[in-house]
Image (cartoon, rainbow, N blue to C red):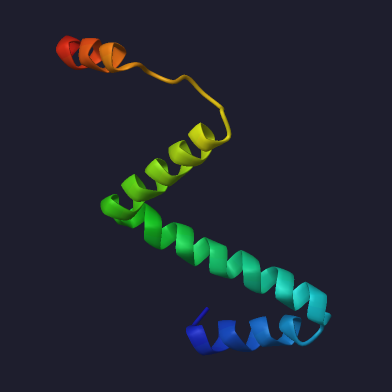
Amino acid sequence: MGAPSLDNEFMQYWSKLTVVEKESLLNVAKNYILLKDEDSDPVAMRKKIIREEREKYMQGEGKSYSWEDVKQMADKK
C-alpha cells in the first residue's frame, strides 16, 4: 500500500472520530514519536534515566547511598 493510499484510508477513519477521540490518538502519536526519538539518542536516554531516578529520590523512593557506600561500589568495579 503506497503512502497516498494509506493517507486516504487514514483520513477516512479520522473523519469518523469525535474531537475527544482525535485528541487521544494525537497524544498517542506524539508520545510514540517522542519516545522513538529519545530511544535512538543515547544522551537523551541517559538524561531520561537521570530525571526518573531524581524524581524517585525526591519522592523518597529507592535506596540512598552514603559517601562510603559509593566509594565501596566504585572500588569493586
